[in-house]
Image (cartoon, rainbow, N blue to C red; front, side, top):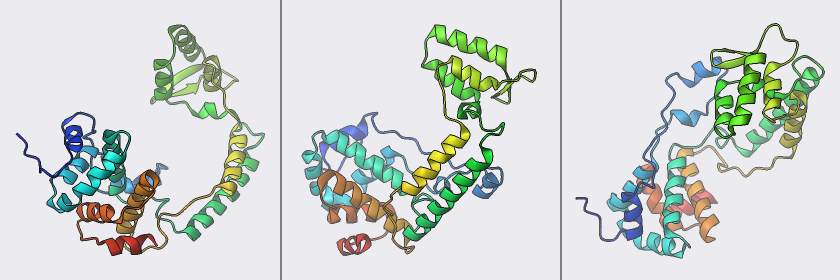
Length: 278
């Protein structure tokens, strides 16, 4: 029998004992980021960092003695929530997400983000111009040719439509390495035609790139990191205070300091939280 600290909110204990909190952690790819980059597979760098499950987050909040003094404040905030269980689930999910550190986009300073978006706008416009009116400028659905996508679509569709899709795949396509390709004797894009039978259409590649160009020029962002100093610590604290600000209209320095101390494995004071988010 598990003995819980008497200062912990019973709602938190109940959700910990339930099956509501996922107890899974993302596994890092077997190959290094550089190896995958060289093959054109671009995963975020944070995937190789240490991960934590949502249930393990709740376990640390409950059993780490450094949390003892702050549980009354956490309980109060949970009771302020319309559904206290939802508060604990959201809090643990947020901590699990930010535990591994910032993603590649968040690692960029405001100036670096501006420069990156400028490069994207130039490249998107240039590629759109080059691809327009060439054989490559077909519907983007022609590039959605993995077997998985068709199987997933069919799992959400009805039997009659699935029969039409299977018939069209047999007529227009051949399966190679779990990817559908147009049969060699066809003058049409078989994959596009199959998606058309399924009732799915998409823009041309050049049109999509024009949309990327427009959105990259218009996108607005708020950088979590203002400078590259104690990056993981700053990211964790700024994201957690932003979570509390969103839900309670306050950055809750005391709760942030306690939680940050536990998950960053270093003592974080209230003043350090204030200094970090300035």
